[in-house]
Length: 218
Image (tube, rainbow, N blue to C red; front, side, top):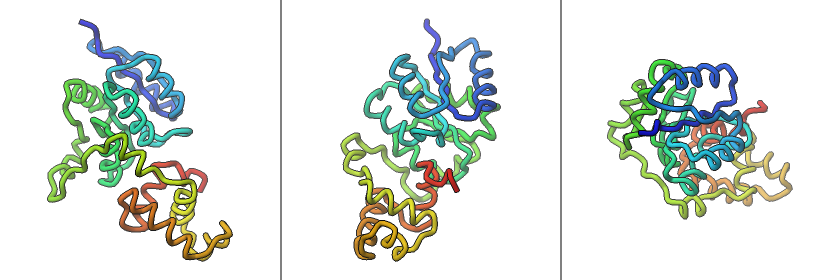
C-alpha cells in the first residue's frame, strides 16, 4: 500500500526544517514537497496532488486561509491541515469555513503534527487539544462554504482597501480623504465588507486583516 503523500508549506525556514524532519522520519508517510509562499504551495500541490497539505496560516503572496479556499474548489481531495500561531476561535472558525480538515498550533506541532496528519487522512477533523473546548461551546460549529458562496463573498478592491485602513486604525473621515470619496461611501464599503465576511466588531476586522497579511508592514 502506498504511503500517504504530504506537502508542507511555511515561510519560516526553521519551522519548515523542523516539521519536515518529523515527517521524513515517519515511515508511514512521505514528504513529497515543501514551499515557502502561498503561490508556490498552490503550484506544488497542483503538480504533486498530495493526500495532505500542511499549510501555515500566514504566508506571503497567498495566505493559508485563501489557499485553503482555492484548494477546496480546485482540489477537494487534498486534505488541508492549517498550522497557526493563533490560539483564537476567530482563526479556527475561518480555517474550518475555508474547508480545512484540521487546525494545529505551531507551539505543539512537534508533539502533535503526525497525529494531526493521521486524523485528517482518515477523514476526521483535527483541532489542537489546546483549542478543543471551542468545538463544544454553545455556538454551532461554522459550516463549510461552497465555492459559489466564496465567489459571492469575495471582497471588492474598494471594500478590501477600506477594511485594511480600518484595521490600521484609520477613522472613516480620514479613509474618505485618502480615497477621495465621501464618508457615506466609506461607510457603505465598510458595511458591505463586514457583512460579506460575517464580522461584528473592529477586533474582528483586525483579526481578519492579520490572516490576510494586511498588517505585515506595521
